[in-house]
Length: 257
Image 1 (tube, rainbow, N blue to C red):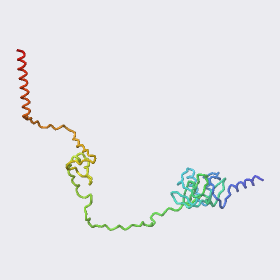
Image 2: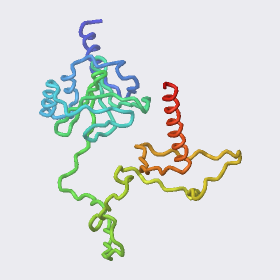
Image 3: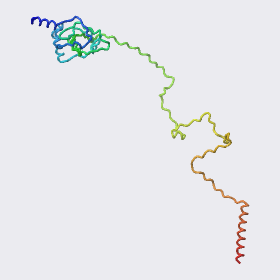
Image 4: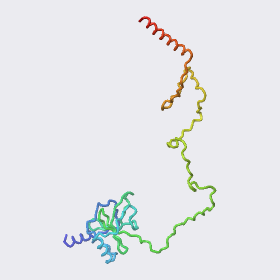
């Protein structure tokens, strides 16, 4: 094969364009060419716009990092779900790209560059330079649907028939008058079945009367002193004692004489 035929075959293989392909395994056949120079393959984009896109791609001044899903491309802006004109391998281009074999949870990230209505997306997993369509932003000043305003309920001006719980001055609390109130101890309420003791203490069935209640601790009371009055028998015994002492003294003198 001549050198010219070889170069022609290489050039044809380098510029191969496929009408459609399935991007079911991102990262398997990454783009091996120059990402910035790949933009020149899009001849329908004006030369000036391509220059601005290439300058921004060279400086990595992307608009945003969008999320590519099976049926959508999500980002700050709105994008059509289709991806087209994808570069892969060594200079091959696929016009229509399908993601039908992706699962609902499969996601890939892509850098988006937009200039003059033309947008380039570069998936970070394989650098497959592609094209996407960004929806036009809403026109400023366009009529928008006004939110529904709920009608306000009529105010009932009927005065209240009772005083509000928090209205008026606070009630004056009475001063404590019992020891329980002073000590901040709640007063015990007697049971309805309680019967106070009155009269003599009943004797239990065993026949042993109950012990009297113990007195409260404190100093014992001092009873009043009452002078005792001697009885007649006491005086008689006192006289007999004196008489016996006198007789004994007298007998003692007689014996000594």
